[in-house]
Length: 421
Image (cartoon, rainbow, N blue to C red; front, side, top):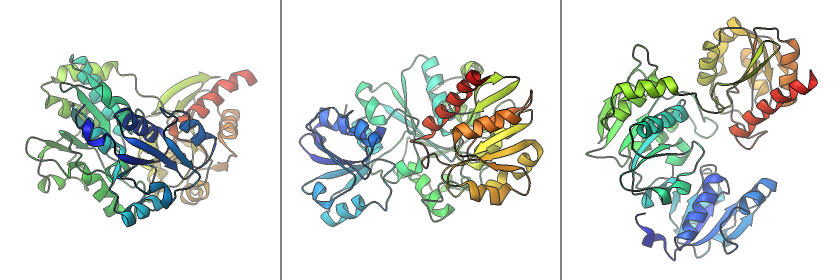
């Protein structure tokens, strides 16, 4: 790794005990930093996460963020879930302590070339596929970031000849400093995270930070069909490269093909990987079939655009399970498809009233008390040939730790249906 000496002996506070926070704290401790960890929540989850810290020497503060805990620190590292409204930022600013994010720490240490992917939807699929194509070409690639495996958890394994395929969220980009991907990809931009950003302009500005530090020798890949993105190439210092939907390929596959072409990888190898690709867990994942009713887990679909894509790729009538924590999405985007395909919309979570108010005029709506109730209600009314689709259009944080836990709950209920037959 590079720059190990920069962190050695430094007093660093890591804010947030999610996966990336734990991975970052452990990495910093192993390379000689003096690490503390703070999390505003004190729960079974955060206590379990604290148990995953590398050493009991890492001091932990739970249930609050205090100014005293930051005293004497030389740096604060924030996890993506620690928003700008957190008192951590205010305390650090008052004390003159620099604040960076987990991906910035990993980038400073990373010897490999970074291919970073962002956008409102499709990030996980594109990041995964780029990694799969690079591996198929005989090179070593690490797929990490917002996709599940934290960058800090993988960086110690990397070498200069390797590649990092990194999914980055707007939240992560807010706290970069020197982060400079060799290839940056912005797939699309649609209404998302408007619970965090005042509007689309601010959301776009966060996404644009992916090319903030790029320069000569770097590449910025953009979709010219996206009205928010088509003009960004003129303001970037990197070389702008455009991808678009091609015959036989969707825009995400075209983005992958364009990105790996910069490594000298041929389209033929891309097509082979696309054909063999079985998808990713929680993204339009076929779970199984019972009494002729098919179940699809699309828990990763946290935007209306993603849910619309799922509906458009189902040939049959659908019982749609949706809801969670509202992110500012425009649910009306699925109205035409829902009127055509959805037999019933089963709503859970905090956003159920918002979704009902938006879609209740075009589809039958019923509330469910939670995932078990929603799955059971859908299955009781479904007929052979119907689909039960979990495609929430919302974040999971009102009821679940993350979208993975939500997807697993859906799959567990599908399995439990067999026991009730």
